[in-house]
Image 1 (cartoon, one colour):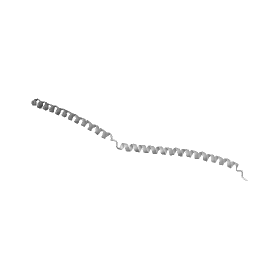
Image 2 (tube, helix red, strand yellow):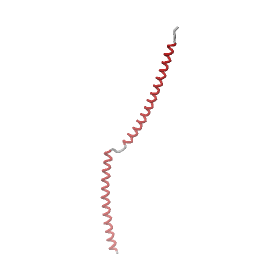
Image 3 (spheres, rainbow, N blue to C red):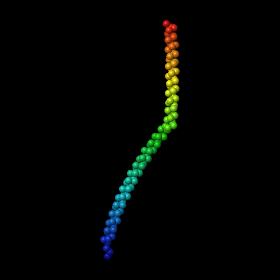
Image 4 (cartoon, rainbow, N blue to C red):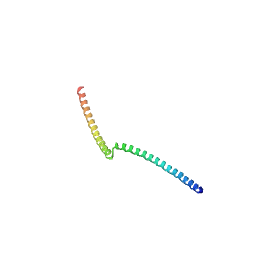
Length: 102
């Protein structure tokens, strides 16, 4: 008959190594799954930001808007001065007509 006691020792060691190895593999896989979920979440967030940024004006557009607003301010200033001059002329005509009526 064959002595199986050395074989038992080796089988116990192999079972221990398989157990530890499977624990390590499961641990690494769970980290990989968490990393994949995190990457997926980041990808979704980046995609949302890119979608929002597409609708935002770029640097050139903002600069053009600033120039247009400056031009509009100048035109409004000219219109206010013209309106004030028209108001003064209207008052003078009104004063003249009131003085002639009296």
